[in-house]
Length: 256
Image (cartoon, rainbow, N blue to C red; front, side, top):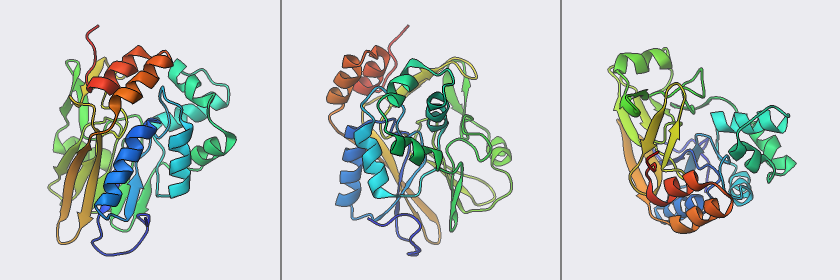
């Protein structure tokens, strides 16, 4: 596989994001990418934070060497490694990572420009802000196009690839830019209290990614891949994370 720095014109890019240390889901996506003959990949962050042994996913990503931007949870892992207070999930992950994994995370840029494509995790200026959605009434709703444009700033690329909210989506702005969120490779549902309580649910346990091609128009395919989500959920349960178990097994958030 080549990485997305390869200048091949119009060659499709497999866009991955938010794998959260779920090595089973990552391997299923990589197998699907190979089956399709796609040789260019890009990764939008939140790589390792989760209730799984993060080392298989970390080793796979280091070996691939694909263009990757840091996500908010990648930053949190580094903060925890420096001794700052972090969540139990972050501490679980940190305790299983090797120094070389943390060094790799520390070297990831916040944004990355690849020809006519911009990679971000949240927004270009904040890895913890959703670009295409906002919480309202306990769920995520689409942001107005004018807000998305403001959060992006002046156009610098035809396509913007973002992650963070685990919600597969494609938005075309009036200025011609196409914004793509591939969804989450490894965590199909979650709940969060920032900036207010909300839940995110893909509705099924599939691993998700996107295929993006730039030619006369930006062509996007949102892909969902079945894998052994029960085994991943069982691992989360063994490690003492019942909420994650439900999210991974069902793609839904269990009622409180």
